[in-house]
Length: 301
Image 1 (cartoon, one colour):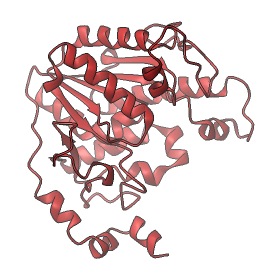
Image 2: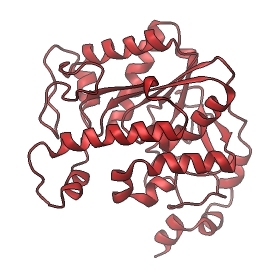
Image 3: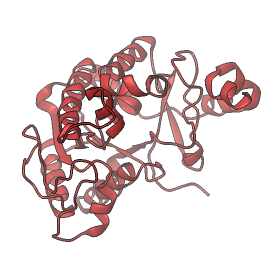
């Protein structure tokens, strides 16, 4: 009962962790954005872009920057979600691919809510839940999706439908995006993130940026930051985003959000209707007074 109270109540957090909010308040301010800047957000799945970067996306757009988003997967690995959509514990063949198509549409609507046009969005369609395995395999044999069974991109909306699920193809597509966008700022997950797809996204992007001499353009964020994080669950607009347990050694910076930006972030998250049906309190917990970002993926000593 005490654990549930701590997870769900902001008052409990101040009771159990009296220094948590103060620690966030002491963080330096994150660097902003300026007119003409080109910002690329690299998202492992549809909804990640809204959960942790929606506030900063709005700030970039409001500053006159151009924002681009690329999704590595289409979120087709959420089998529970597919089951709920089909109202059956045993979804028909192709249900996860149909979920992927739905989630592409949701991500497009979420981006529109944040002021990012459809022409600035790219979907790659690689296998949800298998990015790290594909990254480590590093060979010409395609990885098979553990959820759809596909070995190549099945989505007509993707950058390259039919591309085999290999690391070489993933890098080819991401390099094409980098060539097109020429980012001044690149927002990518940190390798401290618990989710394998997020770590793979970070690893491959860090390699590609380093080859171009652009690793200094990276700003890192986290979604899966530790057991039950972020706490408290649910919508608490007047509560800070606390430092995640898995990233406690990173040098976080604080990006404060205005009330209007919080509402914009909430609208973007709510556009992901399939996810809201399954875990609304988890998603809403990301709408806080601030977002956290770090300029280095290396823990401080």
